[in-house]
Amino acid sequence: MKKLGLAVITLFNLAVITSAQPGSGGFQRRTPEEKAAAIHHKLDSAFKLDASKLAMLDTALTALYRAQDAKRQELMAGGNFDREKIQEEMKKFSEAQNEILKAVLTRDEYEIWKEKIAPSMRPQRPPGGGGPPPGAGSNK
Image 1 (cartoon, rainbow, N blue to C red):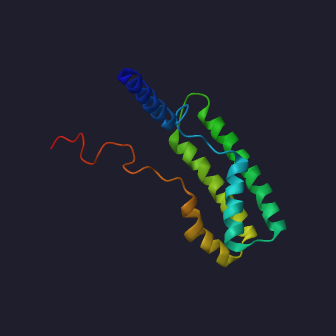
Image 2: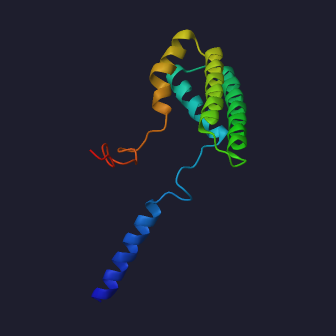
Image 3: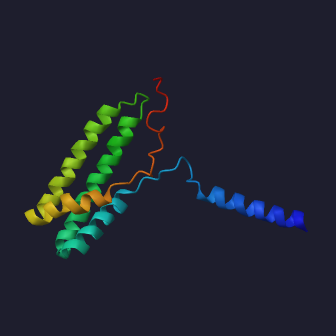
């Protein structure tokens, strides 16, 4: 009976551990629609924008994010991964997003977006960042 109980506990622990692991490499990229919906929700809850402005925003951001995903796939295909080129191209999409938001928001709303809302939407790294601790590997 003790062996059966131990086996059940072991299997339970194993199931919990494996289910806590992210699937297929961890990070799952959000779809363009999910990204646009997240911004829609934040802006609507913060500023109670007109429905026509929100619809225009959804359409523009979804198209922008689709183009961004296509460009990212294009840059990452082909085998020569150039991080600087990818960052340069993604910066253009970030600037385009800002222009879309400026067209929809007032100057004051846009400032609130940039200072308070946008930083809260950035993905957060886990504590420790996953890298080696400071000073590790240095030969002093």
